Image (cartoon, rainbow, N blue to C red; front, side, top):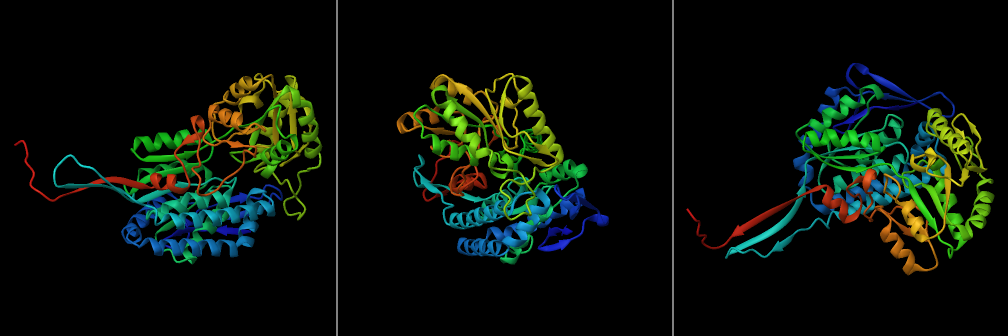
Length: 483
């Protein structure tokens, strides 16, 4: 059994009165982690500590912050085995998925390190004679970040790296579904030399989560709120932040479309669909949930896609040969199976898959999906690809946009000019031409539109999110005032 203490002022501490909660291994059903369950007072204390640490950390030179974040990237990679142990036990992900998470997370830390010297301003022509006017960016203060379970190392690292690079201090609330994994991020940063209080990690029991979140958002030193997770919870976070006039960055759900045009390279599109729909059991916000195919190539595409999907079987993530692991909970698996059954009942063709055994679901391809089916509009967040056949490009774009979500998308065509025009018409924050809907690079502006949230992680876009833009003037001559 793993353990996850609170991390406050660089020290592991127990919650008030020793309160704990258990995270159950989705595969073995044993207790994976026993975690400290923060009270509202514990959460407020973490924010107080972060506020106390802010003046010193925000005043550190960028080179010092850069070196520390690069050192953290090295330590994270050195501890890949520890992260893998936690990811497998807490989330049912595979060893390959854990290794992938650590590699990307290290890149996120290195990119944030590079951004420490890119926090710049500008001089602005002033109408007043003798006035030097400038815009400058400064750290905000305390950032409250909430990370999800599905890409636990990547998304918790992303939640803290750029805020720290910009000179802010952070309170990270880990997910109740992977407290040990998220706690390791704090340990890595402390080991890298981050000063006491600059990073604080809290956990809460599911029944106390709302009160803990409310307390930290309301704290006067907290100036930014970030949340990655479901659209349902994201709306609640936005409402809480709005009540306290706190700017927030939300990266929420998705229903990514992949458009396959008649002139597409079919094998390349199939490769992207297999990866996009089934990687990490489809539990990625960018997962390919809708494959929109022109009629002329639909039969050939579905045949090749099915052949590839049939070769993948969900199994125990502790098996070194496992490609597809477990769903996060049995409840999640039953929900996905319900979407599949609903689609078949309403006329969809089950091309392949459909086996659901506890937390395991084999890859599923549903053909001839229509708007009458729940799978058409609801985020599945499971290893299910819905095939929607269309007559032409305009119909493909219409269906791609027929969703409340707008995070990732992709278009496959040999005609790049036409594909680029289609990409511009798709309502999404991200669109890839001739590659999978799942793709992330830390220097890119990552985020969505519509119900997929607002704000952007990554690169210079992240600097805007985690700094205050100020106007400062220096008057070098006399000023005449009206009174």
